[in-house]
Image 1 (spheres, rainbow, N blue to C red):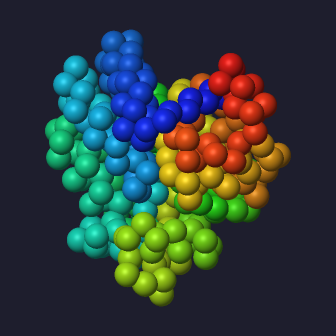
Image 2: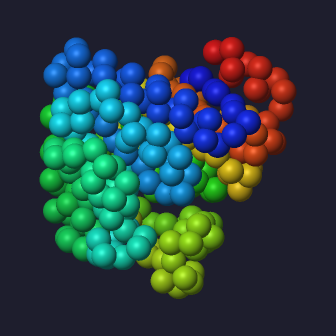
Length: 253
């Protein structure tokens, strides 16, 4: 795992986008297509703005997979991740080959179709964040590190649901769904590369737990430390609780 820390979130976003663009272009050059997994949420705004502005990417040769989605939420809802991906990636790039997780449909059928598609070939690069509770995708603690299923139904814990209210996606806690479809931990870890964009002071405690504590289902994103090509992008706020030894060791790795 590699760690990069930036003074400004915009600089973080541009740097992560440059690495993502290189991974996408390399995959297209080597295999004729780039298969990517996209994350959502407020933490990804600057990164996705910078990435979708990259005109050198042959976007019609990109196949996009969806990381997670609320169960029971229609695409018209402001918090729908399908809506987010449509507006922030698909409309901006013209990607036509995509596999969105429709929260309004039968979750078992959605899982079946998405799992069948994602298993057809390796994923080149996965974009992910880290939740305030340390979750990776919607795998809240204690996360399932053992399942080989590509997508699973998960229960959302209270800190996760409160984060969604705090970010402004829902007006009140009671309106946040209690379940979601999430890409599994093992499926995420199968990606050739992982780029995790984690700005903001509200992520600092989770970052410390995942980078300085044990690799454990209690801190789901800690598993990224075991991936050979995972890069975590932090700003000064999200890195503020890390010890100098951690910063030095991970930055040099």
